[in-house]
Length: 197
Image (cartoon, rainbow, N blue to C red; front, side, top):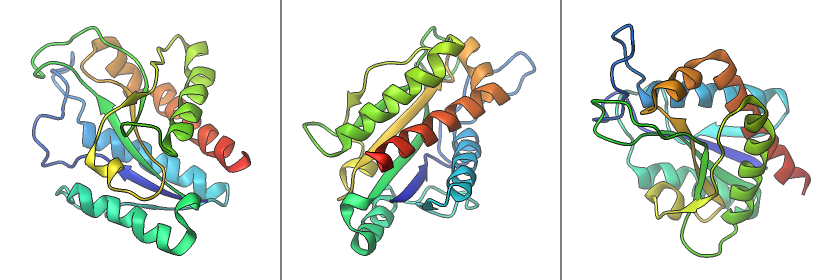
């Protein structure tokens, strides 16, 4: 199994941040996507699972979504599409970023229709329930959407929204060590389940 980690957005992506927090700071989605992606990558390395990022996460600009999907397609040519998965790492939001809105929960997205990605979404959702529900966190049903980065891949692909940074309670949890470790753990559990299947 080869895992391509796609950390959504960059420092220059407009509007991807929370309302102001109590100390005047904000949650920047690109930053926490990369923090979580790095944690997941380190765990994959420890487990001996081959992986890469879909682009250089040290860069400040967004690489085109189709180019990020191409990384997974290039790996699929080497390992076979059935042996590669692209995991797009995101955090969710509602509203215009000026005020907090009550909305919580982990969501796994696949493209529309029945695809090989559906099993991956189910595995992520089940792992999220196992890890997050004991912590009192919400897990939503898998959903479908034609996000470019996942529908342009030849291999299974999922886009994971780990929680809502537009919810004041949830954003603090997402930034916490508990939140980061839990979201990393659920991701690793799902990958291991699919490898063992």
